[in-house]
Length: 78
Image 1 (tube, rainbow, N blue to C red):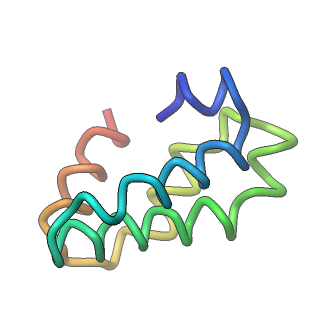
Image 2: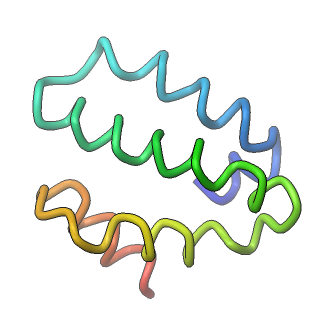
């Protein structure tokens, strides 16, 4: 996610989620929609400072119990 953000920017990263959503099941779709929503909410911040990706994801997704979100939180916190 960081590499994609660095390479193409936050708008293209958000758009990629639209391409992936139809390919996934219900719980995976929900997790991707949550991540996409966080990217949208954080887009102004990320456009200014891409290094804020991890803190934005951690701060905004920490309370969600979905296994996919929990796995992402573990990766982000490393």
